[in-house]
Amino acid sequence: MAGGAAGAGKSSKLAKNLVKYGVRYGPLVVEAVRHGREPAQQAVQAAWAKRSARRKAVEHALTVRDGSLLKVIKDGQAIFFVFSGDAIVTTYPVVPQSSYPELLRHADLDKRESAVVLAARRQKILPKVRRKR
Image (cartoon, rainbow, N blue to C red; front, side, top):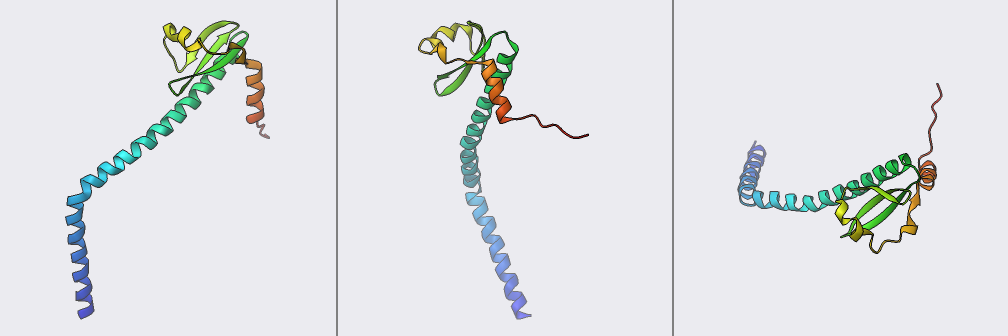
């Protein structure tokens, strides 16, 4: 019985210490976790946005006549221009049309990828899977 009483004393002391340190350092721990998580969340969201922008741009380039795609980097962000022939159709992510000349000033328009090449590359990466019925 004495051993059980000693064990109960240790657990109550542990509980008191947890409460004491939780009250004192809890808000600091919560803020540290929150600040540590935000950069990671932002990095994941940026990567996801870039991937979805490219996917949307490729899909759009495949739907226009003589479609092609050009990637331009502006302030560390990729901007995908969709062309129909030599005319700009749109960008992904969307940027104002007034900024097109500045974005394309130093771009090499010969590096555009045609929709046919993009479609062939996509087929190699993701082949169609046919299910047996």
